[in-house]
Amino acid sequence: MSKRMSTDTNLLKAMEVYVALVETGQMTAAAHLVGMTQSAASQHIANLERAYGTTLVDRTTRPLKPTQTGELMFHHAARVLNAVADLSSEMRHQGPHPISRLRVGMLASIATTLTVPLVKLAKDTFGVEDMTLRAGQSGDHETLLRTKQADIVISSNPFYDMDGLERHSVLQEAFLLVLPGDYAGPQDRLDDILTTLPLVRFADTTSVGRQTEQHLRRLKLNIPRVIQADRSSMVTSCVAQGLGFTLLTPSLLMDGFVEQMPLQVRPLPVAGLSRRITVVARDKELGSLPSHFAKSARRSMVDVIKAHMGQVGLDAVTAPEPA
Image (cartoon, rainbow, N blue to C red):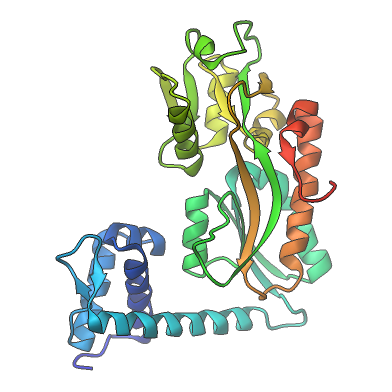
């Protein structure tokens, strides 16, 4: 090595950035995965190349590709990072109980519903002493898993493109038509509703927003007026105030109903649109905890849906086992 990195920590961070770059083929995407700016990520790659006196990335191609020495670096770096992650996991789980520390990521829309039952389950059944919970979107969960910042996530993305994970289905849920509480106009066709109210939906920067947009495009629906937001509470509050209508799943409606927003919920009058919620964890690290998390999350969510949305909400939910 012609020039050593200043610290081992910097070397590991540079390897982390490099692995993310090879996996995504884009500096912007790699920076997002590791939670830093693009300029900082580029600097880490440049430092790594200087430290080993070689060019690791072919910058003339799009997407970016590793050079021959870059391929060697990628395989070694991935092994090093996995070994460090394994050591970190084993050290975190040392103590009087098999799982002494636990880091959890979950969808923001179900965080209020699930936090208390999951904390109680982790502490009472599995002896977890130190627990950190983070709410966000499925894109945030990908970052947490790839950068080893979470042990387990409850997400709308099962991350089938990532190896070394175990998955436990919570439930599958259909999208519903959500209207203002005092709405008295047409309900049988989205085209007719759109003559009266604009569509309020998740922004294109979210997986729910992209899924909704793609489905409406397949249906060849003309959506002239759209209000976009990146949180379910923002979407439901707009609808509750009569600013539009929306398409959401029961779990995305939970907070709105718990807060007693005036909303009408109806089956979606178009071809089916649904999503699945899954507990995802690194394979075999947490014993039976992930499957217990999935069962507890399922019970808690179905109870809230039943209490606040009645049969319409329950009919939209398919659970892998009796709730």
